[in-house]
Length: 158
Image (cartoon, rainbow, N blue to C red; front, side, top):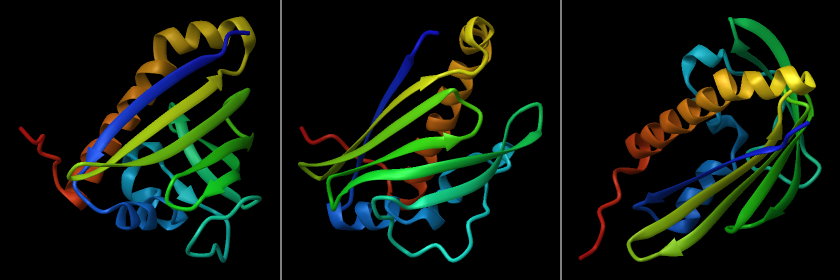
């Protein structure tokens, strides 16, 4: 049972409090998730801000349009720095996602580290190399574009 990681980073031309306000609100998840994922939050009455111990339930369609329930717990939150979500039930055998923010010249560096184990053991490892890894990369490429539409494109300083 292999464990895989995906690391992404994105520079955002905004203040850290503005970016934190956006990413720490569960209601904004749908805005940065591709439509084909069929992403819908099913938790009722979620607060504006996440907190440690918060459980969020979703419906997603990760493969062949088949709807699944995904349950995540926000396990760690350090205001304006990072939060961690972990799958409690869903499509992966294991999912741990760290979201980090760092102040940089002209904005914020947003870093994500996803550590995951596909379902189905050996078959899941094959599925990862054929489908899952590509799909995760596509989701984060979409998110990069969505975040650029919201905050603008970061321009490197010379």
